[in-house]
Image (cartoon, rainbow, N blue to C red; front, side, top):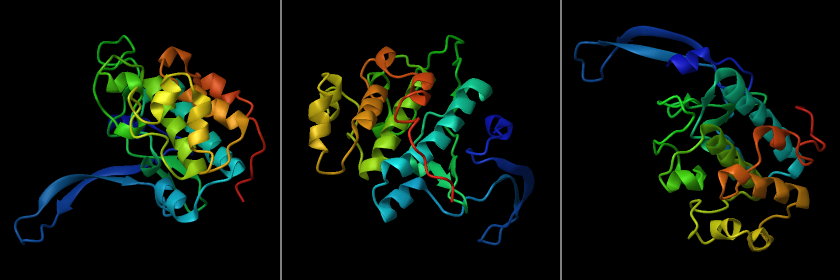
Length: 234
């Protein structure tokens, strides 16, 4: 709860207030005092549902959402000092103006970790978005875990499907990236959606097996695809 109340960003679902009140039970028994949290309204629902209902995003539209979300990730990592650890389209909400907002910080944790060495060990998150080192039960970086998940989210906006079941070297699709054969990976999805070479390079760089070989946040923000033309909010 402390983490949630400290976050203030236009692309994060912010806390309006926290209070305590009586909860009337349906069985008519004595009301119980509970703590409640009021979050700002995001009445257009989940990004997942928008992708499912409207279909694949154009690269320009995906870039519009991706840049806003990466600003929020930058804020989380560099200002708030936390990682989310469960970034996925279901945890990205849209307000009345379709402005994306990261939600659900139940798995978030300070980047320094429990031991203060910036390494995390807990198996938290959603399987299809976890980086391979987390599946291997190795110590991992919260920053790198979040950026890996955002690579999956970006892929889903463009293709309307997930790039793999889990980021394991024996996964039918991820093994092509893990084995340094990205051309075969993208050929597999060529009939799903056309993807520009710049976007292929960005996503491939975000989903590398070796965490040290993945694009950093600064490299992602400076990538030619990210710097491309972006639609206005309207």
